[in-house]
Image (cartoon, rainbow, N blue to C red):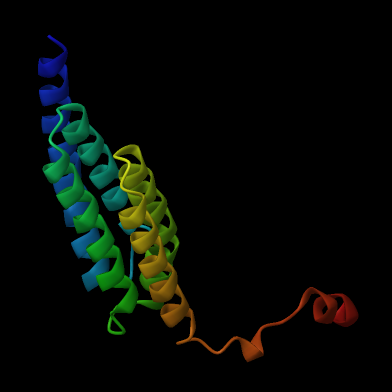
Length: 145
């Protein structure tokens, strides 16, 4: 009975992932829906959890890796709108924590640490692309007001 519920949930999560993917593709080709990466990541997390509940660890890992790679691809694609790339950077945190939780749940601490270290390096590389010297501090704002 419970397995049937997971299978039904899995179908719904697959549909949600398809819709989220379409929204993300639309965001890539237009300058709208810059937050479209988040429903995609959430859909992947939900689908991975469903696979894990069905004890299909390999499929769950594949879906999480899919989310991770999609986030990295969007984040590092200089041809995409900057707002979408920044949202992908934010989504990297969610994906990283989800992968960490996944591997630790399976008692695969080395893989958890490796995935988190990789995400940290990718985040640092991404941030290095921006010039933060033009950033206005709170102190500057107070002085000007």
